[in-house]
Length: 140
Image 1 (cartoon, one colour):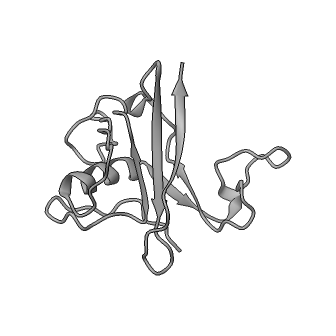
Image 2 (cartoon, rainbow, N blue to C red):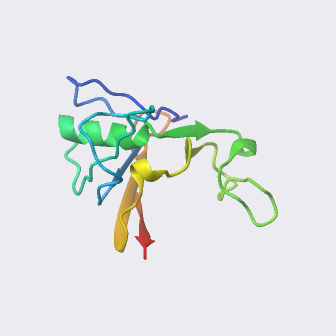
């Protein structure tokens, strides 16, 4: 089961987490640091329009956003609210869900008056990346 959200080295562009997510817009105020999620130095995440897998830049940006999530299982620890169940997976056949660790704060805020495309892919139990899926976040 894929559950790794951070797999990075500054000198190995082949390292990627099982959960891989990137954004079409800068989130917050991007820095060159990877996974800068500790106070007092909270950093944003740079945009990644077209990932070039195998490059250090792509590995840095994907790890920078992915590390802000964690894997949750079983569904008792889901982060999505169902209509009748306070927290549940949106797909009952799912075995894991990836949730932001602390929500979306100012450090990775979506830009105002803009559409941001978030794209994600997850590795399967054999380590193979699955298809990408995207969604648009629209901030008025």
